[in-house]
Image (cartoon, rainbow, N blue to C red; front, side):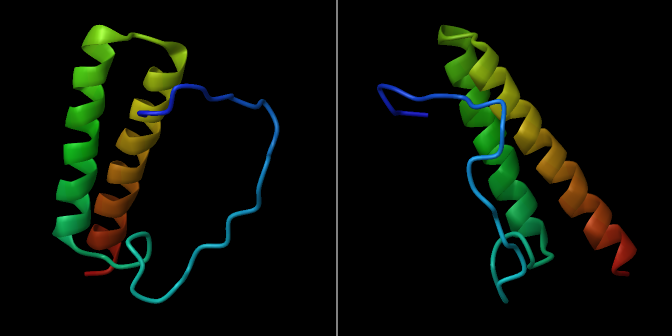
Amino acid sequence: MKSEKYLIADFPVHHYISGRKNSMTTTLNLKNIYDTVDNIRDMLEIKKKEDTVEINMRIQREIDMCKKRLEDIYHSM
């Protein structure tokens, strides 16, 4: 978010492989959710100064990630 210049592509630009053991995306714990909420809070502050399509897309992605992590924790019980 601190980059001076960036592009948003409407096509895939890389292939992401998830599942690395103990990574933030595969470890189910509340700390990961708190970290995601902190990221959302920071981005909402940025949005107050700079309300762009890009920041809104990024905020939505973080919200979706938070929901997914909560669902994963719920379903793992």
